[in-house]
Length: 161
Image (cartoon, rainbow, N blue to C red; front, side, top):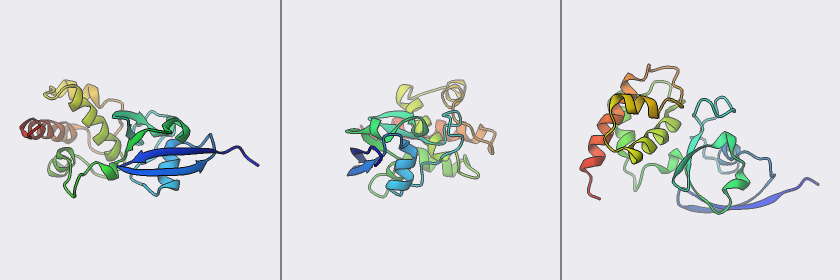
């Protein structure tokens, strides 16, 4: 019999407990065990950023993390970014500014952008480009993504705290 481990974690506000193999990647756990297919798997080497999720408030490449490493953690996937049926300002801005085409990088790009804006609520174009450099988009050329992030930054600055 293979070794198995029990993992207990909260994903998008819902508590889960699953028995998993120790080598199961967090990306595979989210997609296969929980059915949260918004976490995309691109390169499986942590280079493209498509699998980026939040673990305890920080972005991580879920293809580089084992599910057992998230035991006890709070995980947020793209399915949990909208709250109470309302899209996050970044999601709205991406749609309005045509910041996506195929959509494959979008979940990772949104979480990366969210972290950029948390660290710097009023970034310059250059700071945005540097902040999202680790997430590869093969379709857009990044101009619309930068515009969307700037628009979301403005909206987020106006939201009541």
